Image 1 (cartoon, helix red, strand yellow):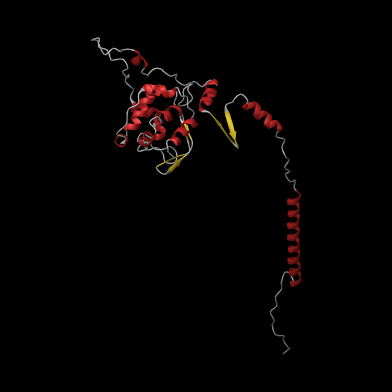
Image 2: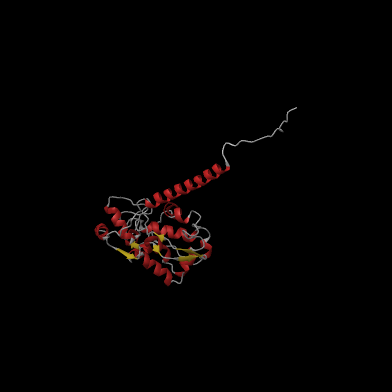
Length: 268
């Protein structure tokens, strides 16, 4: 028999090892080239340039816009203006009732004061009896006036809102003991400045209510002093009269004056 070669298995590959290595090398070079091109394109885009702005025109416009205001002071980046002047500016722009302020303060001796009672006599009924000269006219409902004017901030319970609006429950007797004029003065003229009540600091703004008549302010003051158990803490409290507020209104205090008055009374 003729010699037969043993059967041998052979494998055939599509690419040779040299071709595979060459392809990997070319792919790596290509990727690097793409990255370089992308970096070049990213760095060659137009870059923003900042140029100092001439503030002359802005300052001129600002001065022209604020010139009619007047009555304000600037402390750093904060401007303050007296509340009375602010109300006037709002009224000048056609707002008849800017929030809880009237367009102008009520004049001393306006409706609700006791001037008429002090000047003469008043009818007591159909029998012709009259009240003696100097009798105080009846005040309006202090609780109702408080609810419509003050409760949004100080709450109907007099507890206020911690950190925002100080409580009146438990604190009003302290104000009265320090200086009886403080309560109607704060209601009438407002107050601005940092205070501490029950160990908590408050640094807001209490608006003035000069648009309320004297009798209403006296009624609110009396309610504050007799509600929420405050009457038990102020046994020596003497109710306010409209005439008391009339005399106080004539002092025309500012918010800062009221704050100084409170500080001078020994309150933080």
